[in-house]
Image (cartoon, rainbow, N blue to C red):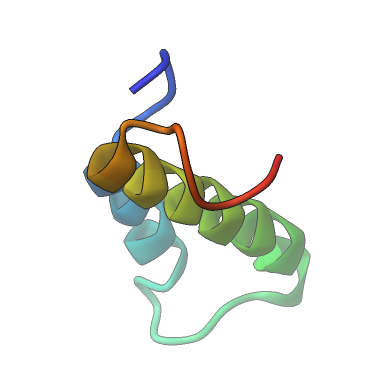
Length: 55
């Protein structure tokens, strides 16, 4: 990976947002950012970051 967080690290933050069982409306923007970051991290881990999701 190129300096970003691992998919596992991002996933842990996503899970923390959902810890109460629902997502607070003020957390929705952060959740969206995290999902995008997580998908990029998965892509980088699988393909070395050379293919897949566009920035």
